[in-house]
Amino acid sequence: MVTTDVQGSKKGTLLVTGGAGFIGSHFVELAIRSQYNVVVLDALTYAGHRENLEQIKDLLTSNTHYDFIHGSIADQQLVSGLLRNYHITGVVNFAAETHVDRSINGPGEFIETNIAGTFNLLRCALAYYESLPAEGREKFRYLQVSTDEVFGSLGPTGKFNEQTPFEPNSPYSASKAAADFLVHAWFHTYGFPSVTTHCSNNYGPRQYPEKLIPFMITSALTEKPLGVYGDGQNVRDWIHVEDHCAGIMLAFETGKTGRRYCFGGNEEWKNIDLVKLICKELDKLQPCPDGKKYESTITFVKDRAGHDQRYAIDDSLAQKELGFKRRYDFRTGLASTVEWYVRNQEWCKKVIRRK
Image (cartoon, rainbow, N blue to C red; front, side, top):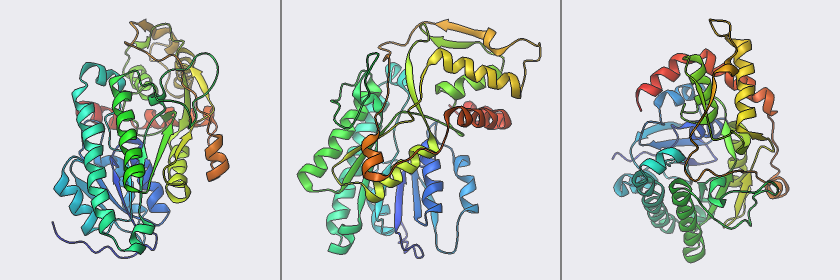
């Protein structure tokens, strides 16, 4: 690997793993706009796409630098080389297998990426951190992007917060919980400067169409039935991806090391009500050719194994300590998201073909 002495940004150079994915690519945009240099490391599995980062070149200034590296966080030689050669000042780890259904059918990849991959990233980052002079160690930080699913399932009342015990119920959430415990151990045992964030369900442009909102949109646009799990009464709290990324940046820049921070949308929706709302937006934007309403194509399918009933997040700590604020109204954000998928149907077809 050629040594790369990145010049320009006074804010430093971030290694963003999984940066070609849905949330990661939005964070990369924010980081470039915030005047960081960015190195993206992504394995480009089915949910990661170079196209998600095409707009980055238009955001670069004379003071910012961006590189993309195709590779895995489990590659010790590659990760160690990137940290040294780019003089990385912070790591933000989005790299993960994330879909619950896939974890049920094939948990092995989730163990390899989410646990073993995170271990390798931490191992390399700690060795690099310990090699830095005092000034470099003072500036360096690692942020682990996690999920609210590590907390398990809620009843009809209450919300998850930073003190909620872990109780993961799927191979996906169990693998993320394990990774979070590793990050905590690195902080507690080695003094490694880490922060972990947990978020509620994200929505917005460029989300891979296996997730609920884009799945329903793309299914409707391709004249497929809208299959809703069980009775559709499962509840999720929705946050716009840009609000989530803004929270991650706040946690990275100003959060206390060793802390966990939760970010939610304060927008709880039953799955069936959300799907009906998507249908109404599609009726306005691209009516069915035969004149029927999209809602008439909703069907109920066999429930997911171990399907958590309800998630909701209390992000008052992030608001108090970090100054976190949401910008997106859910109905407005959802309408713009549906419109994006209607306008970008070719993108959807392209990424689905790669799975």
